[in-house]
Image 1: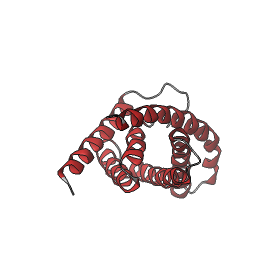
Image 2: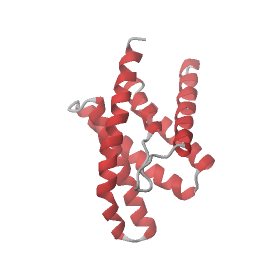
Image 3: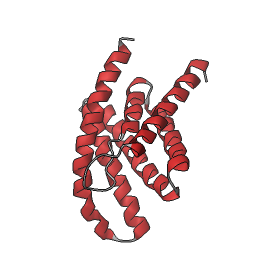
Image 4: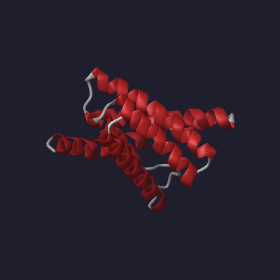
Length: 162
C-alpha cells in the first residue's frame, strides 16, 4: 500500500470518528429516539465515489469498530455493523446501476442502514413488533440520506476539481 493511500485512510477514518463523536454530543432534537443524521456516513459516501467500493467498505468497518469500542457497547456495534454493511452493499449496487445520482445512492444507504438495524434488533430482542418502528426510521433515512447526499455531492464535485 502506498504511503499516500495509508495517509488518506488515516485521515478519513479520523474524520469519520470525529463526526461520529460530534453526533453523540449534539443529538438531533426529534421526539423519536435513535434517529441520527449519520455524519460519518458522509465520509463513506465520499470514499465510495472518490476511492472505490473496497476502500469505502474498509473505512466503514474500521470506523464502526473504533466508535463501538470508544462510545458504545457490543450491542451498539452489532446494530451499527448490520446497518453499515447493508447500507454499503445497497449503495455499491445502486451506484453500479448508474440509475441514481449520489444523492439517490445516499438515500438508499440511509434507508438500508435503518432496515439493517431493525432486522438485527428483531433477532436480538426476539420480538417482531419492533417492525412497527420501521416507517419512522424509513422517513428519517430518506431525510438524512438526502442531506448527507447533497453535502456529499458538493464535496465530491470539489474534490474532482482539486
